[in-house]
Image (spheres, rainbow, N blue to C red):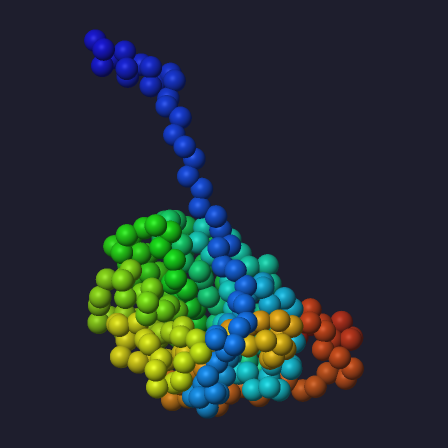
Length: 275
């Protein structure tokens, strides 16, 4: 009888559970310091690129091209329905300047894989990108099996859609939080973050023999960015398809506006071609 009474109490007066909230837009801006500046050996280690998000503001990609940047990895989204507000601007202006463009998603293990798939699909839409990078650097308090299942599921999800896909992480995060498999390297290239060290001392997550991309450190007021930005190097023999880089577009008569418009109001979007 008491069990029936308890059941009826819970039916009409359900217990109130504490609301669990997981904040989105977890990433903060990079902060330059001498200790995290790229080692001089990074600049001769491969093709140059930058890793960007809303924290870099509007970027002068023509200036970035002129300083040697040839690829961009830009944040598109995070976890469950967070979209970077400058993703579209980065996409249009980077491609207009002649660069290879990759979108990245900041993975959040607290959210289901279905949420991640929906968010990534909506963020990219019909954009002609070269590939997707999965940013793996937080657990949200989840165990290694949950982290592994999310990363593996997302890696399998992006594999057939784009030719050049990447997993970003640090060895110090990846090794204790993700289950071992020889198949990780078959699914995705690896972008390893190891700032300020010489090229011969770069640490790579254990499931790859060596790095494909190296996030070598933070630079300040360079590559068309007012402030701090992550500097990356892609091994030249592993750069997408090892094809010649796309040429920059013809110069605009008067100026190149950061919104993607010329002084005549023409959009560069019509000149964008798939790379």
